[in-house]
Image: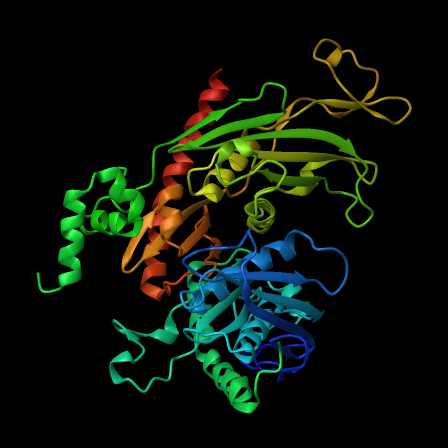
Length: 243
Length: 304
């Protein structure tokens, strides 16, 4: 089935990915992530002593600050902040540094569709750059359902507006473990098939959603490899520079 | 008793008073219930709490509803005002949704500091109502380009005991089904005035909206929140359960079976396809149940 996309991509084709890390000097970890024209900058500070509001004697807390590229922080930004916070909380090993707060600041540089997935990927890369202990990596993807019920991946802003529904999905990156019994199987499903986060907009049938899941899963494999290739832990590259 | 640790807790739980055990080891208390396939309030795992809908709770509003799911209570009121439509959509009215969590609803909410959930739930509610296409905004138009209805839909949470979004959505939908658009007329100056009941018939003025009418609601979106813990799925959690388990899945389906939203913000438990299908099936059942409650209330209102 041929679908015409304005930029000539095939339905499963992602826009060119770009990722760079340690772009900010003062931050403990930072990264930019770009998918085509969409670009997000993320910085991580911490773990630092918990503020009164966030202090938790059992677990480290994570604070997300979302900065839109223009204008004031609106309801949509607050929603993204909350989703990002919960997603990052679920991938971090939070029992290691109780009573601390890790701040993740996300600055939108340019929004051309699939903004939240791009921000999640950027935040994940920044957390790795800062050396925050993570359970596994997370990769996010946007699947969009067009009017004739076909699914396209990683839509641009224009495609997002034209589509009848779209889903932001976040999947875990398969853990590479030296311990054999820690292999990433849960029951019959490999771990990478579970969803960490799912956010949808617009009405679609349940079957369309399940198709989105399948297509998203298949593609995250590529995203995972890209993410892994691009981020080496900072500690191995140079001694900590933040004081 | 092969695991010494388990044996120790077993002993502890029998020595301690139930309330103390519940407060000190909330997770263990919760899991011991799950093992017996029952929840601490006596419900089976996949059953929602008792739900009641009361339409017309606020007499001064154009449409209102009070909804209770267990002890979670939501009050919704809709107020209609005439406004000049925007240039981009001259034939459409407007719907503004606001969700409020006053300090009365929960000990977590402090006066002067708005709850974190407030803007998030507001945004989700307006997204849900727009993407389900429940309301045709053109129906809220009065005179093309000159006057249209602005509907202010305010939802107040009176008691926050879990599943806030489900209760908020149900009360918003119930209030919209109860909404009566008032009768208005245009006077000589081109202003829109409310028509009172007495002089409604002998109007020389141009009548814009001849009589009170209801909105036509196409398909109604309704939702169910589930929490996932290990392999268990629990429907309609209370605030206590929500605080113990961090993985929440909210599914919104409309009455024609379309998926409006599948919202899972993080959480330590990964959702596999089978769990999602189970949750969707539970939601389907719940939507049917809620729709019948709503229809019953609405037909009772018409008889009066």
